[in-house]
Length: 319
Ligand code: SF4
View 1 (cartoon, protein in one colour):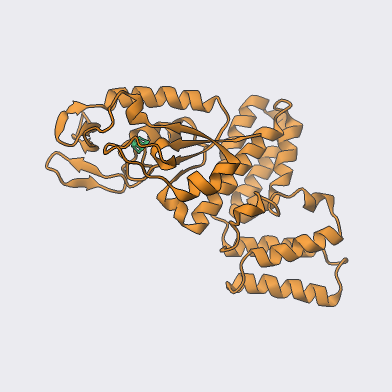
View 2 (cartoon, rainbow, N blue to C red):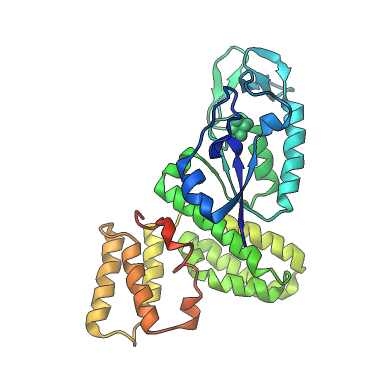
């Protein structure tokens, strides 16, 4: 099924910015495009602001008024209420359509995900740390499970790989429930992601394991909702070299009997080289997949850790 990806319209090249320009991301608009169906939204245009338009910003008016979305040159032109109302409705609508991720435009007072400038009345920046665009804030509150990333951060190979992995995982989760949400479907999904969870968050790997073992004692719809959020938040954590090494050694154990001495040494060397940072993760994984083809194992073959997304995305090369 198609991976529905929400996107700030300017990030895929729509000329909707205040200056009639766009912020096209090559990665999103070109490399990711064949795998996804974009759901583009420009919240500022959606609330009726024109193109071009006056610039807007977040202004901290202090207690009890708080942070407002106002025009830079006319603080009385306040778009907060309209934007919040639109954002809540849009987030509600998107929550019902199995969206698998969202790429937002960085720094925007509407779409930015983090470190958006919040100004004081005196024109100085109050804080760059806490500012979140009004629209994206509503997305994050309504869908805490949703992978959301900024266009600029996707230039970082680690963040990019993690984001793409998560949108494919969420699609896989929904596909796994295609015949209806059931205990069996969730248990099978969880089983396929055990190695992934070990790599991303060993603590939640254990806790989610206990939660799934107790699935019979939960209302299935409530379980589905809680599992989705906990699973997606666990895999949002970066898979560290140490955790990946542990998973590789775990995989190595499956081939104890199947490999001869030389093959074992070859695999151990590659895992060691990855642990030291002299080989990418892809090196030991390629060898493991090769051994798996020669020595099929039903449990390992279904592990998404080994095939998280199409190889043509070439995302594991630099990890
Ligand atoms: S950052 Fe958001 S509000 Fe601004 S132009 Fe892009 S889509 Fe529209």
